[in-house]
Picture (cartoon, one colour):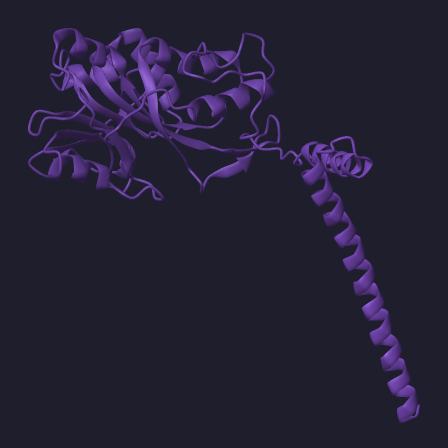
Length: 328
């Protein structure tokens, strides 16, 4: 193509651009002129304006109907379940299907029921195992040198126990028959016992000595002593241990209770074990999911966390404190 032909094409392209811009400018100018006329003359029944408004309403209505694609995970919230503070704290009704029991279980454990204003982390940081949350609001604030802690489940991590000793100056009794250590004293305030907790007093197949909480308190001379903090990470033994605590009535002497729930409840009887905590006055102030232990539920194929660390306070002590006029 000759140079003259190139210039001719370029000139045509420029003309087309100018015409296009002129058309757009004229349309915009017409709309603006119409709008100025409406504002100046106060006309409201104008077809142009009505069409514009109708188009905008249609776009808004269309956008509002777009729904996110649901994901099959336990944190999809069911609309028909009320988890407010005023709701009846039943996880599910008798005869509920496994899907509802499972969903309610995880939702309930993550529903905070007590507003702890002064909460600290005792031990390893929040993203790691070994640390636990402690509420220091009155009357749960532990008095240095006068607080008693039971810690079930140590493995190789003593960070919680050391914190309660060095920072809070509490007497700490630690229990773990799985680590192969005999009774010893870790520090002036920390006592280790080669014992475990369960739903009955027995020696299991691994030759571990297991006792109920009530039996352990009697063995240590703490039968009528209040536990400022009870921690329990005992790999599934929490379920029978809790049932024994209910039979013995020992949780009335526990101010704070932190435990890790393992697995998924499969029937209403499992759910009732957790419901009983609420009935006894325990309220959840913090829950931590174990992000390293996720799996697909064998019941529903829902993605779930197999370990849930739940922290509770016993509000019966709060009621006693208010009645006696000791609130700070």
